[in-house]
Image (cartoon, rainbow, N blue to C red):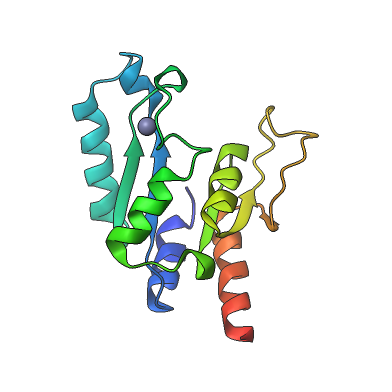
Length: 146
Ligand SMILES: [Zn+2]
């Protein structure tokens, strides 16, 4: 996404840990090789100043605890990286991202890309941005006001 690299670097400079949490149901559905997804994540980690990538490879039929909107990926990442979820932000462009963040105790920022599933929906988010750099500006503005 445009500006993502710089925005994530700004978060890191401000002292945040940055973890990507992603649903990849195409793995369980047999539509993509897990190795391809692993390579994508490795490339992302090489290019961006992120600390970790956490993935749910299951589909909704699996009933796992890690698939967003469940908060399992966030809770595990927080435990592993010693992250205070109450002082954290979940940023995402799906309602399931906002729900997972709220369930985990995070403040939430919804990036509105006007996806069909979200138009006219009650998102239940704390804040709304139009891009990842916009979301990062919100986070850093909040932080400096404390
Ligand atoms: Zn899962």
